[in-house]
Length: 522
Image 1 (cartoon, rainbow, N blue to C red):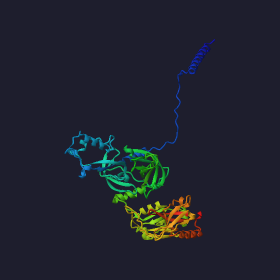
Image 2: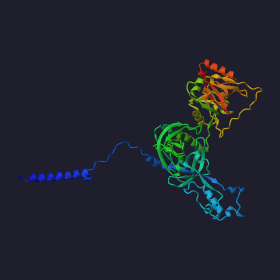
Image 3: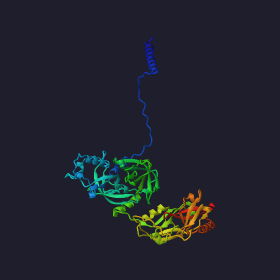
Image 4: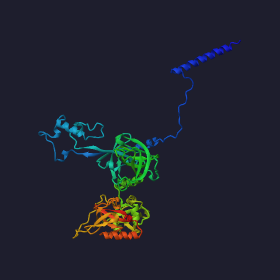
């Protein structure tokens, strides 16, 4: 017999024994030796998120921090007030005197907020090189962001960042600090231009054509939140044309990105490194970031900045009217086909509109043939024109369209309040009358023009639209009224013409507005 079978049996038994031991080890929880190749780690082939590194690397040198300081003068400098300590002035006291220590500690409460430990300088630090106390010093009042728009040192920031400043310091991306001077500012659009006088060429950025920006596009915000230095956040454009009540030319780009205090004046970039907007406001019920920010569009900023660089201020065309939106009810009452245009509530006295014959109740529908969408659109169109320019204003009046030529004025810096006219007192009290269909009780005004509302019925159409006791009805459907019978006859005529609403011109606190009330209520 061959020995091969015995070797096979011996090997087989050995193998079986080893397998048995391994099984026993696994069963008892003792780890068994692992041999052979490891399994591959999990890898997923998925689209990668965009990287903003190239954009940030290119634009960061152009973005700066803007530190604003105001001059603080000691109270005693004006000669009206001083300290006397047994014949010695405050400056003559030794540094370790209790009163001097007290005032040093007191002043630290209002110290340099840019220093992490407050203003901990000693009295010697506050003295000049000759040992005399300096007559005054500057303290930081705000810190925001900005960015260069030219290689010779012109930079842009927000007006609200610099408006209280006496001196300005620009902190570069590399930490160096440079002095800057104010070139011009525009409170209405919250923009300002500074200039750094330095013999070097600065890295600068250009403005994008923001009309090509779409909701959903990626954007990158760069700035200086909380004084931390250059900080980058990313998000998307979440809306266009936002009106947040900040001013007459609101047309903000809404950005869904982490923008905080200190980002004001900083740029928002597209992925080509172009500025699509200038960060100016955030929506923040708590004061912190909630992910919604608002940027001034590049096209708006470019036009304002050009004017500031040329002359230090912005001149805008001025029409001189108070206006309000055209609602569906107002459009119906006036016979307009669409809820478009700007309803004139009051032409200001001696303003270009009044001189040209524009009246309360007119609806401005176009400027030089360009359709007016709403009051904000009209304000932007007029502001973009030069003072003195003659423009054709198309208005809807008495059921038809007319064109009025107006020579625009220059928008005054401070708009004067309207002055109420002299009132006369009638010899006899006037009787109340009730306009049942509108839920109003009225009495003729003491001036003889208009009807004073004395009461408004609860749940009536008038109450729903905001009419209150004390309001004065000046006109209905652009026809003056002085007694209740005037209103009744105007409403009857409108109903016969098939109108479903009547337009009431109402005044309160010297401001006029229009309210459309449905005719078919009574």
